[in-house]
Structure formats: C-alpha cells, structure tokens
Length: 257
Image 1 (cartoon, rainbow, N blue to C red):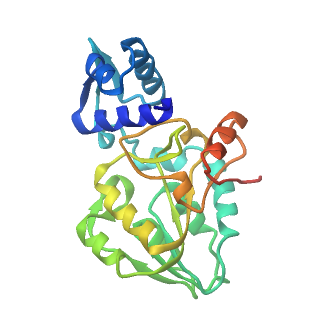
Image 2 (cartoon, helix red, strand yellow):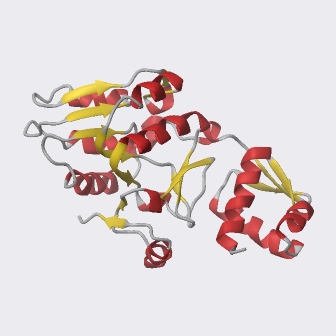
C-alpha cells in the first residue's frame, strides 16, 4: 500500500475512534511498528490536533474547539484572499447561477461582485447575503437551517434539503485545509453534509484556499481536489507542493497579484 493511502486510512481511523495503537496499526497494514511510528510523526507535523500517546496517538480536540474565531480568520492573510477572489471572479459569467460558500475568502469574492453582474447567488453565508443585497441586478437566495455563529453560516438537514432542489452553474467553496494527499478538509463534522449537497448540485466547483492551508489535515474530508474543477490559491504555494498535487491530478490555479 502506498504511504499516502496508508496515512489517509490512519487518519480516518483516528477520526472514527479518537485514538489508535501502533501495534494494532502494524497488524492492520502489515508493516513494522517503526513504519507506523514514522507515519504518526508525519500526521502530527501536519495536524496539531493529533498528539502522541504511549503506544499510539489520539485527537486532542474536536475541530470546532480549535477553530479560530471569525474575526481572527477575517483579518488573517487578507491580501492573499483578495488576490484569490480576483482570480475566482474571472470564472463568473453573466446570467449564471452561482453558489458562494460561507467563509472569509469567499466574502472577499462577494465584495468584488459589482452592480454590473446579473447573476443569481445562492449562499449559506449570512455576511455574504448581506453584502450582495446592495447589488441591483444580483438575485440572492439565502439557504436556511441551523445557524453556526463562528462561521456566520447555516447548515444541517434543512439546509441540505433546500440545496438539493437547486442546480448551480459554478460553486465557490471554502476549506479549512488541503492535505498533501489532495483531500479537502473541514474543521466541523456538521458541515460535511451541506458541502456534499453543493458538490452534487454544481456543474463546476472551485475551492478557494490560501497557501497557508496546504500540506495540513483537519477533522474530516469532504472531497478530494481531483473531484473539483480547480483549487484557486495564491502565488506563495511552494513548487514541491504544486508538483505533488498535480501528480495526483489536482488542478491548481494560481492567483496573480
């Protein structure tokens, strides 16, 4: 089994069980305990929520506990997010039905949609809906559901059911992390159902993620980069990371300043 595939399976076991034992993993994957210990060290470097224990590893916190406050995320890397939003804007055509996810990078995108645009925008982001209400020719549809304060967004079964009724031309999604295996990670399990309903509804999907989110894991994966149209990031992404992801058939789009 390839190392990347084994790392993903170990990550999944850790998410499912909360803790794992080196000896058990050694038997499961038919490799030495030394190999498993090296695998765990790799995961720990990429995910601060994984900690070593005597004979294995465990998750120290849930994703929601370690997620930064909205205000902190909004101010972090704002120039990079602006550049990413500018590039994302070039994929929008007049008259299209768009989905814009809740998030701080996607809010930068919403701010750049001017009065000249004539689009329908579906969103689960409260701030994004409020931002777009000032546009004369943009029709805004706000998805209802359970309100999550730290992301200013709705999610849950009601939101998922509503989203399944729509067909979307282009969707712009946020993410908490992009793994070296190409997986797109979220920090909260309650959001995965809604993200998957958007993926099913959209013809094209672009993930907006600044370079600081790459080569990291988070709580749970909602998709792989090769399953979306492209991942839009900034120009600071290391060349080695670009090569690794492109070998996995992940389409990376680099924003220019």
